[in-house]
Length: 143
Image 1 (cartoon, rainbow, N blue to C red):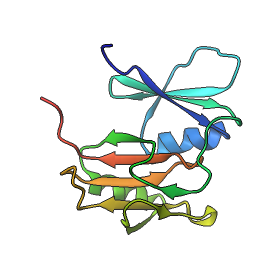
Image 2: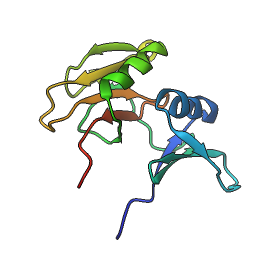
Image 3: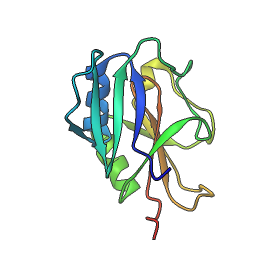
Image 4: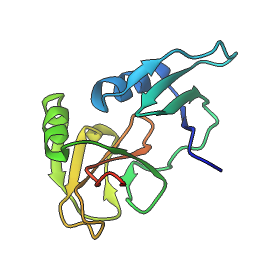
């Protein structure tokens, strides 16, 4: 095995998820082959992230941010700047409460920053429209 090629997430509403990953997370959409099912592909550095419409896919049962559960992490240059940019889109910064940061259906517009992570770098967490956990971090680049 040499490297990770892509990450794929099931989504229910392609337009809503496409807008989230483009406008909130800041990914660039890339061309996608003409598969029989709808989806979208994004560039993440020199890798890819794929969205695939699949109403029967694996989705979280509750809108809870649990940093030790399945999640995707995007490295950014400045977590605080990204949190500020995302807050300007209407997201509300909330205090980080560790595993189990609950969110309700009517409060999906929040983001939390873990300033005391044992990882040694800042981590911000939010949920996408299908409750997939998204982490933004400023982890050092590997040498």
